[in-house]
Amino acid sequence: MNRREALTGMSFSAMMLMTGPSFAVDPFPTEWDLRDLYPSESAWMAAMAAAGAQIAKLAAFETGFARNAQTFGTALAAISGAQREAMRLAAYARLSASADLRDGAAQQRQARAAALAGELAVATAWLDPAIRTLGRDRIDAWLAADPTLARYRHGLHDVLRLAPHALPADEVAALASGGQLFGGPQTIYNQLLGSDMPHPTLRLSTGAAVRLDDAGYTRARAVAERADRKRVFDTFWGSYGAYRSTLGSIFATQVAGDAMLARLGHYDDALDAALATSATPRAVFTTMIAEARAGIPLLHRYLRLRQRALRLPDLHYYDMYVPLGRTIRTFSPEAARTVMVEAVRPLGADYGAKLSAASGAHWVDFTPRPGKYAGSFTNPDAYGVHPYILLNYTPDYQGLTTYVHEWGHAMHSVLANSKQPFETAHYETFVAEIASTCNEQLLAHHLIDTAASKPEKLFYLGQLLELLRLNIFREPMLSEFEHAVHGQAATGAPMSGAAMSETYLELLKDYHAPVMEIDPAYAMEWSFIPQFYTSYYSFQYATAIAASSYFAQAIRAGDTGVRARYLDLLSAGGSDYAYTLVLNAGVDLASPAPYRALLRRFAALLDQLEETL
Image (tube, rainbow, N blue to C red; front, top):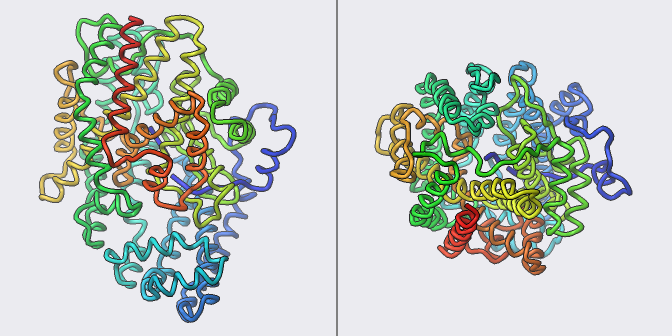
């Protein structure tokens, strides 16, 4: 459920790794090597000092910026170079800090990288106003006269598009200098969950002791013994409930920051502000929720089939994650890589070769451990090096799917950087989750097709249905919650953890009742969603699954035209707006059509499940 964000590339050594005759690494690497970014902490410190000196010179480019195409291009190149280095510095800081949230020195490096980003924003606060002053006609004339400026075209036009929402340069500088304040809620949230909040240990009926941190909960919520599942839910959400007021305050601060930025930008609300940055039509959000609501009867049919398959007298929320069918198969990290490469074979030989090489290198940190960031993510913010993946890997199907999901992000970045310069390599979140969920669906179908027994096939079919259920219904529900909390804040309603839990409980009942019983204590689930700390992120999983389902089905059927358009979409990076790129690839996510097609596919899988049962 993590996602992941954008901008990557490959170092020369990584490119050699991908194109040479052998990519085998012995033993298989399960730890990342941050020396691809900087050879040592002292080298990072030296690069930080050099970047600071470079940034200090950028304000001088304001004089002469609009004199002619040459001075214009020189300034843009210097600013772009500073941005690229700042992102690389931030990548190293984030990765080292996420590896152990208790490491004070690493946390300080992350704070310094964030401060540097603020300095960069302040030093370039004059840039967008200067671009708007130049105007479209003169900029287009310079672009036509100098082909070397082409890499800046989309960014320049985007600044002009957002002119009605622009702030004066002094306000931009003031906001930039307070950048750490706006990122504060997410930092505090991560620190609380990863380091400071205690995680209880529960002994199951089997005698096994489970530490209920986020990774432990994800494993234990699917245990076979129903009484254990209930105890896992009660204990885990009870531990979160003990911090309900604090978690509510943190999220309320995030919502307040989103609202403030929306007001300053003259947007109708935080949703409009979030959509505007990527030129996504509001109809994408509203249509997605409307179609999810219309499909709730299918969700209820699925829940009844789950109850039947599990032979339960009734259905509770703690029964949601127990698998249908069964398998004893496990996946070591190396086995996960082998299965993944085989599963994505329909994407073609070139994609497969690049993935094989990259996944055999030191790009991934697999091992769960105390203090490590909970969850998973792909960090691609180091153009010219390569993406890094953080996992808390478990050798089961859940661990495998997370691994494949994150490699979808990483390969998106590899392909984008192979075709795009730094300035257009960054892709929007709106398109990022297409790459990850397409790979997940290819994996599910591969495992269904190669299952060794009927119970194993039923297990994988159930897991595919869960993937679709999570994205068709749960993500729209989360998006409704986020939008509701923003709306309540706008009206001055109480912004407490208790009020948020009440809102979330009502949505749980809207989507699941009367088929499923919902314990009010489990409404603390809203506090478990890190995507809420990136404004209006969750809805993009639902839009992504609608698009990736179309691509995965056609690619598996051997449609080479769709496969080519899909790979072109990934290679396009951020060369155009994400909604436009997806539209050009054949899917209009502002219309009901892709969501209704996805619901039909969900219904067909339910037919298959019912027939199997």
